[in-house]
Image 1 (cartoon, one colour):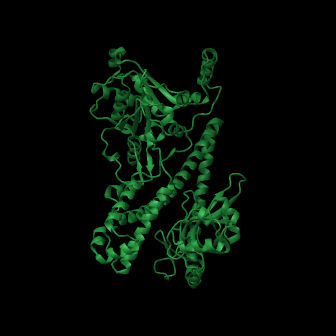
Image 2 (cartoon, one colour):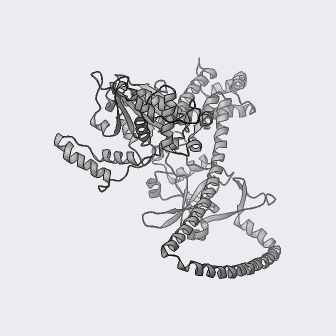
Image 3 (cartoon, helix red, strand yellow):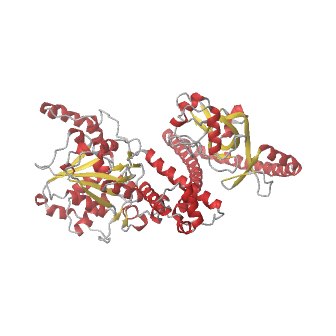
Length: 634
């Protein structure tokens, strides 16, 4: 990467001097070399969990030139875009009131060991004597201000100047305010005096109450106060996040529209970038929360009646078990002979809850994770997807719709060959599992190429003073711009702008449709259907230890009269499904801790010791914790 590039990798910055690093960072952020390096940011307190100490950082960094957001120009995704402050006492601020203050600060590179520690060669720290508090001013004030999030801020010395200028008026208004405040204080004292009398009366009336009642009352009052304070804090954070998200969405939409006008992406891809197109508003059916008040027992009864109405027969026990397994977020394996209703249960249940069922047939020649998730072809610069991966992307675009993805006849190939890596991801309970697809470096090459092309387009338009030309068709028709781009892009004989545009559009489409990694959507449940016969492979202990097995017998052996007796009557349209929200299928949570005094665990230990161990059969703690997780889920 040359010095004019937008972003750098940590590797290519190794060996650069501090002066060179500072020059590159200032250039990337739009500062001239001789310009004082000042930024605007918000003071944020950070607590050290190890020793209980606190320090401050400068968050939401912005340019002192135009108030634009600043981000360190690095490829690495985990970089914190902040500047270190340390103790606010060093910069003459009150630590209690410093949190959230907006300041303008002079910055410099952090010590080298800190930059190495945080894997950020550009990491900055605030110069102690270079901090100025910013204050909001009216729109009618001098034009010496910074515009941030719709508010205007000036340096403290300007604020102090105008405060001194109008000190007489301030004193007059202050005296009036003090008189009114004193009157309010007198009124409050009278009210307090009256309340104290009433309080004494109430204390006399409550003297015969028990100590337990008193303690419960105090606890309830404390809980209400905590709830009220939490609600206030939540509303504040919600407004802040909504404002920040709106700013970010506007920025993304602006950039996406530029790509749309240049015909590098289509409307559907822009909608996907902006998070449009969720199908939740189009889902039909009875609302689970409104109709059944989130009663799971009523849900299962309705699902059974809904399926019965369609001529699909499942016992209540099977439906309850299947629903309980869905709430665990673990792999579910449906085992039974062909035609026993395994795959049909997935389709029928998904239909009954207003969800989607995706059936992915497993091929006997599957031998690796590439057969399940696809692979990146470097020659075509394109990711070759699979039906399974396409289903994950579709589910991610519709986060409010439950998706049941079924690997049909999953043991036609050896499951541990193609599914082991994915199964390990499902075990991650602390956070949403992320599925890597290909190197971020490949995505970085595309972004760099597209960015450079847009820069060359802007340079060509500026050269001919045709900044109003914003569509690719107009760009193509303008001979001057076409020739200039041909020169700037270094096209050889036989190359053309149209050909290069087509190449770039394909790369953009591949990149937008298949990112380098995808987080397992919260609305997805993975299910496998297996047949046990001479044409299939039996599941290995590694798979069995991490999956829930649900066995199916032949439907001909079912007691259909008993099932019919289970079906309840509902004064609802049984042609409509029950519209179930994803949250009703359970939140992803850690497995319960192993407690040997738990009755279930005691029973399992007894079974292992008395019956299984003599037969040479055993299972580990993971199985025990999954069993406990199964019975604890709703």
